[in-house]
Image (cartoon, rainbow, N blue to C red; front, side):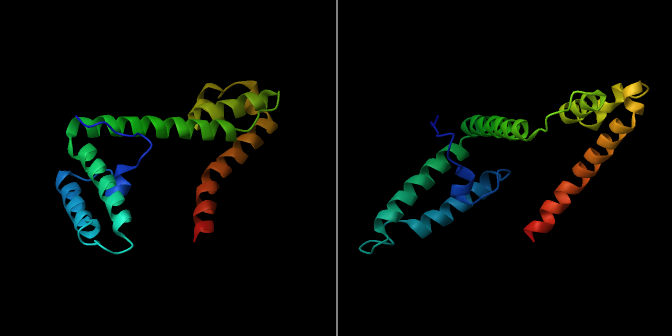
Length: 153
């Protein structure tokens, strides 16, 4: 079983999607090995770079071609991504003001809009300030991805 470095993106190294099957991985590996083989670049300035790239390709192929190693690698990557997403969302969470609206804001940020279901029927839910906060957050949740996408274009 091959050992691997969790910080490396082997899918990026082989230029395949993380959903690629064994045939796609093997085909991509063979194509890149032909492109970066040191014998092809012997005697020119790219020889050292080609040797380094070939080592990276071999390492990536060893990890992704072995089913058990790939499963472990993918699970570690998912865990790292979820931890990273949690950290970034925890730092971006707005601080709630100390009021009934703050309780509702806390529910929305922790549990999403479904967290509001516990507040329906209470006095806090009927207050104008709480309704304003809910409407503002719903608008932000709806509009933020659209604004982000329009800025990328």
